[in-house]
Length: 419
Ligand SMILES: Cc1cc2nc3c(=O)[nH]c(=O)nc-3n(C[C@H](O)[C@H](O)[C@H](O)COP(=O)(O)OP(=O)(O)OC[C@H]3O[C@@H](n4cnc5c(N)ncnc54)[C@H](O)[C@@H]3O)c2cc1C
Image 1: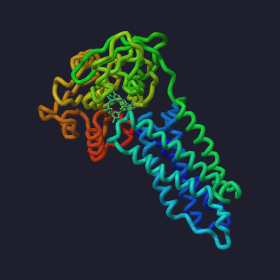
Image 2 (image 1 turned 30 degrees about the vertical axis):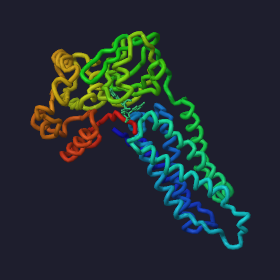
Image 3 (image 1 turned 90 degrees about the horizontal axis):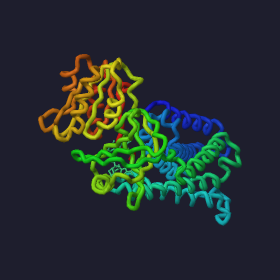
Image 4 (image 1 turned 90 degrees about the vertical axis):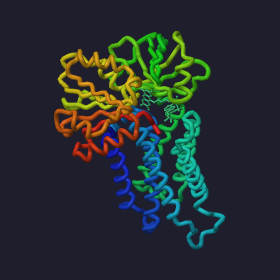
């Protein structure tokens, strides 16, 4: 779930900037100049926040509710920044004040830099939001946003008499943001935002129904993680390209690290077809805040297909005597697709506090609120919900649960995508 602290921090920053900008507007500014530079400043602050989020700092994970949420916020504020920048561009006065020699145009080089920044921003956003572009191609092209930011910083620093010369408080805020943004940009572009690599060797590659389980053995210290967290998997060797994020499906106390990977595209197919025991893997993490331990005693865990992995880790880590009453709803297309179902049944019987509810859509059983109403012993409002699965399923359930009066703060979701 997206936590409020992060969003409130961004909103607070924008509010402070807006107040400072309006209250301490230079005498030379008319309302139009104040308004349009305000919009430009907000666009710049949003871009800065978006870049700061790409540092993947653990404290930001706490504020936003995990890296997946940070990337979702990164995307939303990137789009908002572009909208503000566009309105700024169309609104800002373009004509030279009377009596100014065009050869001495004070808008050069600020205006052309801003214009270029805006053009690249629109191109970059088009690429960023285009889901048809393959991830491996999308990732390097997304770096165009670094160029956009540098151009916009140039635009701002060379803006005539707006901030630096007038020593306006909002200008100082933007200067500080630019400093933070550039440091964050360098930090992320040069890969310093990656967590330390923990080396493993591949012990087994197990073929499951439409998925592959990769079992790793540590070559040194084991990765320290909580059930439900995920990590980036980097396979050593030619042709394995970029790191891929996967939820850890083993328990922290297990001496091994296990990932259960649904076969989806080239990389996951290669894992299934070519990965061999004995190879080397670096694991970077842990990330994510999909943690059910601090929630209420009545919990619904809802897994759709491969969305089972965080719950698999949780249930493998759980000890008998756990006070929570948990209903694990496991929705799959058919019984054959429900990997680890036998293990889940066994664990549920051992633990005593977990009720397993398998649902197979080919039998006409879907994960729906009506079904929950029938099967759950208590009113829907009394549970905390943890959900992971296909986006349409999660969005539909979230909408229906809210319509049933379940507060948003009781619904926790994990997204298996960053963009
Ligand atoms: C937080 C998180 C946890 C995840 N946990 C699991 C899990 O436990 N089990 C599981 O099967 N899948 C999980 N995934 C999804 C998994 O990362 C993708 O299915 C996998 O990377 C697809 O790679 P591909 O090249 O085979 O498929 P493609 O068809 O190339 O990609 C399918 C989609 O996966 C995403 N993707 C592809 N490559 C990357 C990458 N390098 N980095 C980030 N996203 C990428 C993109 O959104 C893309 O549209 C998780 C994803 C996230 C973000």
